[in-house]
Length: 137
Length: 73
Image (cartoon, rainbow over all chains, first blue to last red; front, top):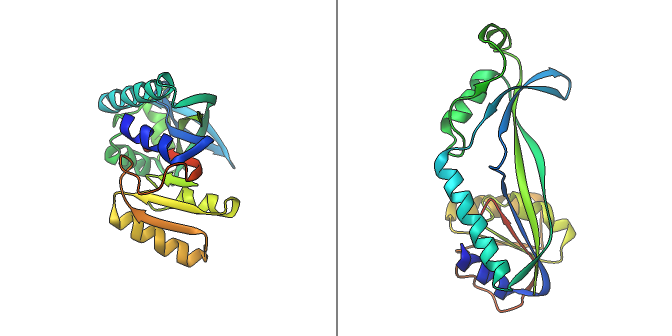
């Protein structure tokens, strides 16, 4: 990862911008039930798989090293959220089953009868993305 | 600009209308084939997709104004 950042530094012009965007595992993702047109309500939380947490920390350290080495300076950093949409709850569960980033089980905030009632309704996973704009020195 | 780890080119093609030249680079030849097909479909004339790895970028020093690492690090 540090090698990739060093290469990015090499091919960028001075004051060029490197955009680093990746999933933000410092916060939970949410399993959301659709309650209206474009409206969702959180029904559970989804943690990041342990291996991915380790990978994310390695990425963080690589960026810290790139900044610490003076290759880049941080100009702005933040987080935004986006939704992955599913036509029903089984589709969402299949996605979680196939996806290495998340643990496969939702930690539910609503009881089983409600979940059964909403089984065929649209669902979403709301996940956080962290970004940082790094200026090449 | 360059999208390092561009996958199927979604991000690079989204940026293309706002840049003079966009290069997408990814180690997966299938992803690059898909990105090239999408670029043809969209008639994107200022995009180029190449197979390659982030650790060894096949470009001269100080070539780009913007580099994107999206879901790459």
